[in-house]
Amino acid sequence: MFYGHRNAALETQERTPWVAPDDAEGSDVDVSPLDVDSDDNDLTYVPDDDDLTYVPDDDDLTYVPDDDDLTYVPDDEGLTLEDAFDPPNARGRRVNVVVPQEMPVGEEGEVEGEVNPKSPRVVEWKKDDIDIQPLPDFIHPQPDFLREPYEYFSQFFTAELRDHIVFQSNLYSRQKDVGSNFHISEEDLMVFLGLIIYMGLVPLPSIVDFWAVKTRIPQVANFMSRNRFKAIRSSIHFNDNDQAAGSQDRFFKVRVPFTKVTRVFLKVPETPIHSID
Image 1 (cartoon, one colour):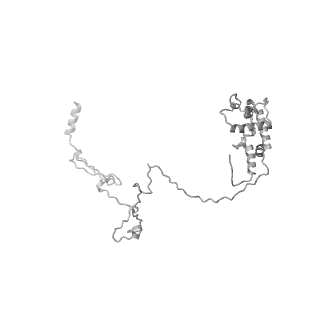
Image 2 (cartoon, one colour):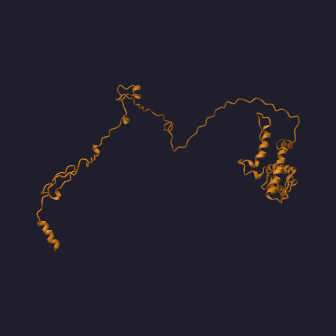
Image 3 (tube, one colour):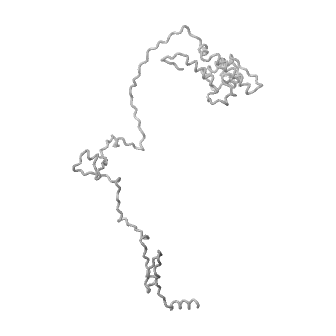
């Protein structure tokens, strides 16, 4: 009941007209007087110029190109070949114009010079004679006498190198086991190397087959036992392992024989014809 009487009193209350105050000096508030008899629904918001934003339609948009986008296309009338490739424009600058040309077409209808990414690349090889100057005839001098194969081998695998391998092999066996009774001599080394060469000429599936009953090879089994051959093969060495830690040479373990044999090979006179076995 209270709210009902209050609402009725508000409806019957006389409305007092609102009067806009005078503009204060230096104030940035813009107050516009309203019609006294107007309702709230008659009020209309009038925005300032700063609040207005113009959103153009698609039909109102016009593209204005820059100078870099302009290309001078001359008319056909009065066009010379020089003007076609280098015509002047309105500002006096010259703009290059590309004149399209007909591309050559191959046999299969493809444009020459155009690479099809799906087709594999075809490389065409052409035979051409190489101009090779003929080598002068070389006459090998006849030796005074023919040496034995062992002598030719000893020329490159010198006694100094053999002594070095024997010493390093005995040293390595002591480094592995101080109490080892393994010992190798220069004669044992030469027999071992001879067996290695012969095994390369008569290969078998396994090394033990050279001493087996059914596959025994007398040229191998008669000169060294199987256990002795395995012991030398596991202990043969070419350099001191204790010095390998401070070396940056990846060829350290075989550097000594490689260097000594190479020096001997370089002393052999070079000939224009070589025979490699």
